[in-house]
Image (tube, rainbow, N blue to C red; front, side):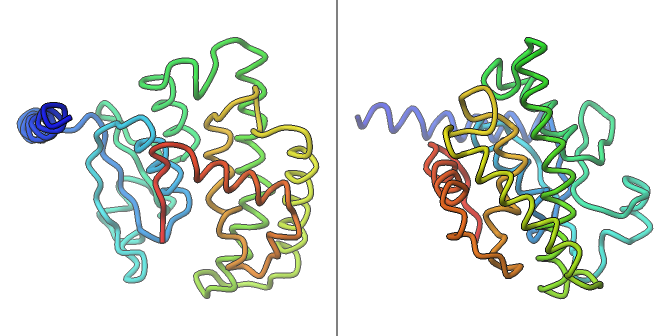
Length: 220
């Protein structure tokens, strides 16, 4: 309705004014080409969490600058400032945001459900990262190295995911969680590393289900 639209517009303006006065609850240091930063942006968008984002110029090695290395001595993006502390790892970012703003939906508190979600969070940091992410980086000349071993890891990651998704829609606890978000970006972009995603129909269907979620941010 017209009144609802007006109220939404007024709230958006008021929200920006409040954030400008009191500051954002979070600050993300990210680069546009980072799939790990994309994970955080997805959850921020889904939960409508305000966050100040500072772009780090990856191609001019902004992530290796003296100033940035004070935030993360590993020289990697993203970094998130949370309540005055700096966290380097995307898993930590997703866990904090999910528990702070997402309730039980994105990271359950019951031990079995939490373990199931974290199982796939670890998978994202292992097979997906050392396989799909690394192969893509080498192919796109973002990293140096040979693709033979990481491609083997990537093919294994896709097979594991395809088998797991054969009789389920989501990776853990029967619904979308941060497990899906953690695995999604480098799976979705795996064709840029030369992987044949349509050869894994269950994975491809899962990617499309993720992207069909309301408020799921898209990336070019």
